[in-house]
Length: 162
Image 1 (cartoon, rainbow, N blue to C red):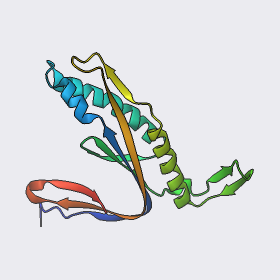
Image 2 (tube, rainbow, N blue to C red):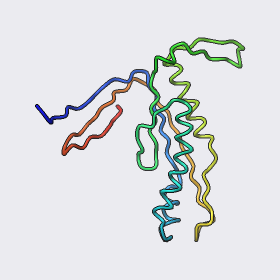
Image 3 (tube, helix red, strand yellow):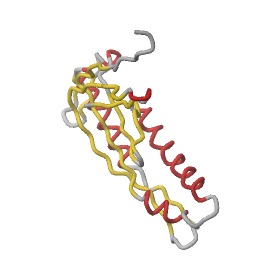
């Protein structure tokens, strides 16, 4: 029938998910809650911090698929272009070919390590606060995923990875 949208579902085999959760968001909101233009200042600082994080994610070939409050959900999917990659072992002093799903994991792990190594994003000079810091907690998962568009009521859809 015309005008009916069907849910979309597709597999994402051998994929990695990186979850990056910002700590300090509550303190940031509290620090600017009594400041004129506080909401805009919170948005400004979050945008600055997320821009740093998104640049790292892009560098490693990840896709930020969702902003979940003060967290990012990042997908690393198996790509044909990475089929013939090699891994240089510093320990064993040799070059070893790796499969594309292994390279998917390697990209995600490198991204997670770089995200986790970022120094705290510090905001100073906020009345009543010595400083406010945003830091990051990072988790990673691997497996066969299913991408789904769920919902549809009143034309509202949600993207879900399971």
